[in-house]
Image (cartoon, rainbow, N blue to C red):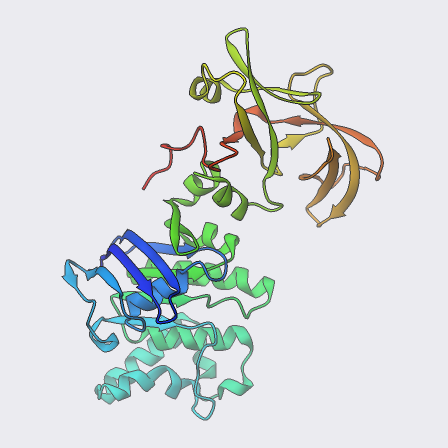
Length: 371
C-alpha cells in the first residue's frame, strides 16, 4: 500500500524562491498520477519532496498516514527514473539493473531472478551483456525502468523519462509504461510538460503553475471542463482559441456577441449565465470544435479569412483572421483552402467554454471537475 498526502506543504529555497505553495494533494494507492505544467511550475520539486531529495519547508508529507518529512530517501520505499537515465557506462545492462540490489546485500540468486524477470518483461534479455554506450535511447530507457522495477518499490517516481526520445518511440514507451503500471499495481507519480503524455497515461492529472495547483482531475475532466484559461490553453493542439465579447439575453436564451459574430449558447451555459446580459466574457473554442459542413443561415457560423494552411498528415491546421485576431482550427485533410479566401466555420455550440476576462476562471465549469 502506498498512499501519499501533502498537507499545506511549501517549498522555499534560501534565495527566497517559493517553488511550491500550500500544496494539498492526496495520491491514491496504486494510482497513476501525472504532475503537468511548464518549466518552473514546481512539478519536479514536488516529485523530489516525495523522493526525499528535497526537504519540506513546512507542512506535512505523509506516506500511509506516517509523516515522512525527515525520513531519508532509502527509508521511503520509492524508486526513481530520471530524464538522464543515469546509467553506469562501464557496467553491463545486467550489472546496471542489479546494482541497487547488490548495494543492499541481497542474495545473489534473488538478484538474478529479479534482474532476469525485469529484463523479460521489458524485452531486453538479449541486451544483458551489453554496455549502455551500445544501446539506443529507447533501450537505455528500458534499462533505467528495469533498475527501478527490481526494487519492487511501493512508489514509482518518474521525472520526464521520455523527453530524450524521438516522437515515435515516445508513443510506444507510453504504452509500455502504462502496461507496467497495470501489471505492477504500484503507485506511479509521473512528471511531464507534455500534454499528450499526461492525457494518455494518467488516472488523474495535477496541473501546476508557479508552484500552485490549478486543477486536479481525470484527463477528461481537465480537457473537457478546464477551471481557468491557463488549464484550457495548456491542453489542446493547436491551443484553444479565445474571443472577447459580451453576453446578450434574447428570447429567454443567451447569445455571445462580438462584432458580426453571434453564437447561441447551449442550455447548460445559458443557465449558468442567466440574468447576466451585457456581461463581458472570454469565449473559448477548441481547435477541433468547428466544421465546414453547415446550413446556410445557421446561428453558429464564424466567418473568417484564411491566412495559412498547415497540413499535418491526418488533418490540417487552418489559420484564420477574424476581427483583427488570429485563430487556429483543425479541419479535415481533404478540405482545400488558399490564403485570402473567406471561410464559414460551424462552431460546435455544445462544446463552448466561457471564462471571466478579469479572473480567467471558468464561468460554467467552476464546480464541474472531479477531485
